[in-house]
Image (tube, rainbow, N blue to C red; front, side):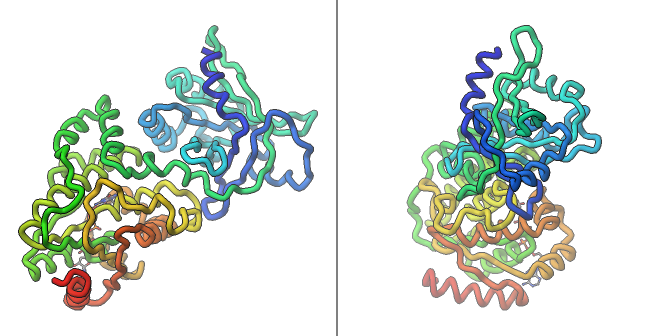
Length: 422
Ligand SMILES: Nc1nc2c(ncn2[C@@H]2O[C@H](COP(=O)(O)OP(=O)(O)OP(=O)(O)O)[C@@H](O)[C@H]2O)c(=O)[nH]1
Ligand SMILES: Nc1ncnc2c1ncn2[C@@H]1O[C@H](COP(=O)(O)OP(=O)(O)O)[C@@H](O)[C@H]1O
């Protein structure tokens, strides 16, 4: 067991390690090296900011099984690990190769635990072989901080199988949370989303029924000749109101994503980790694409949310810390999926945060977990808004939706006339 664990852990060598103590500032970055480097007194504060003097444990979820990793990470993050909740600080951490796609392993640092043996960490490790636990110790003689990787030996004892010296390092070009977006936080192909849903049938049997709903012959190019207009925007920007009045005025067909047929499963997937939530919404977009293809043969089609929502919420959820940690405009994460039917026009409704809150209160509707997050967290909301505006091919056209409903409708009808010749 130790040998197998060691070989799996071995790929961690010469990686970087980032600790996110404060989401409003950059993480503290360290290089993991096999041999201690000469200490600079200026580095002292990097260590004291993270480790103080107390022992600290970093819990890395390191398994090839994406589903297990996503579920375990969420479960552990949202509950407390037995014996470590009292007075401990918990920070997000990333172990990664700088600027290498798909190299980031998310985990978190629990600081201030008296002794690792006292906690439930080792029991968790035994129950979840894919889980790896590290401790951080200051070696008094060399005054260096070391990361010790633990694993379970054949005789059942926990042993240190590898150790790396921590050296403060410069921040890499890309925030580590942006490295795994493609196919872990956002899906750009139908098959990739289906793969995740297929793998989770073991603990979400409903996924099998979902997969049967999707027509395997997905429409890439639209056969229909009528325009397709998507209305996007944060909740309470007026999408439902506008899509209904547009549908009446244009004698159009109103569709939405996720489509009605997925409603029975939505609460379940909204409560699942981001990986599964995103696969569910991606699947919803492909089912809606089939409906758009058929409907646009007979009349104009208005769609309430589509790919922009899926990608914007996925990217904003994945990228931690500041808004400027988002991948820059033009990044491949903002591109349209090659196999998803494209609309003719995407309108992004925007209102001021104050007006949105006023409308939300007035409407009093219940919120998804992400909508609650939008309220509580300006930074998350700004990341969603920025991501919406960076998505390409087609990019969205921003509409000021703060005027009264009839004025917004007239403004949008003019836009549709100019862009779609309707
Ligand atoms: N439709 C959609 N919703 C998503 C997606 N990803 C996350 N969500 C969440 O679902 C919420 C929207 O749910 P909807 O069913 O579209 O309800 P809605 O009435 O359009 O929401 P409002 O914007 O409040 O009108 C979003 O605010 C997100 O919290 C996605 O890909 N598509
Ligand atoms: N242009 C507008 N001006 C003022 N209030 C509006 C406008 N559009 C919608 N509302 C009101 O704001 C609330 C949210 O509108 P809704 O269409 O449900 O937004 P969304 O579908 O984007 O969540 C509703 O109570 C609605 O009556």
